[in-house]
Amino acid sequence: MGGVSAPRARFRWDREQGFTIIELLVTVVIVSVLAGAALPMAELVNRRNKEQDLRRNLMSIREALDAYKRAYDEGRIAPVPGDSGYPPALATLVNGVQDAKNPTGAKLYFLRRLPRDPFAPDLQVPSEATWGRRSYDSSASEPKEGRDVYDVYSLAPGNGLNGIPYREW
Image: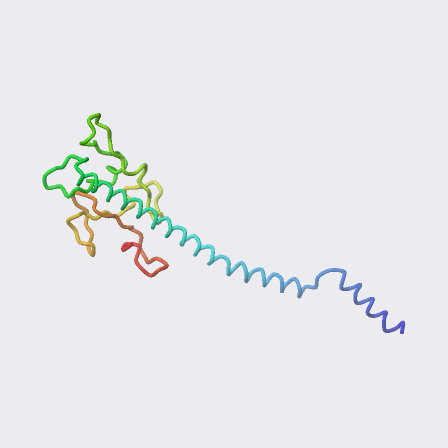
């Protein structure tokens, strides 16, 4: 009986000494596989966040353009013959225009600040230059700049996670 229990006790004693090289290698491999899987997920999360910012920024600019047009149609912005009723530049939404119906000469503002295209690579470029601008006279399939800003679009190359090119958002 003593001979059978002695090797077990000795085996337990060796086992409590530490990890074997095989156990350490298996642990390193598992950790590296997990890290390899986490890196693409982090890039995907970053891209998804930029796309959400792009949607939000496009929506806020487009709402400001629509508010400008409503103010023009209501006579709050002095009409100019031949004008479409849209702002001449994106900066107009931030800088404001004189309220034609207000005798004190107050200004109408449509944005506090102009948001940037989150996919614009150069942070030194002004926010207005990060957007493509479409005039009222141009078609949606071939947007061109003109006398006014009817719509904006992203200048980022490539497609979103939904498969639609950023330019068409």
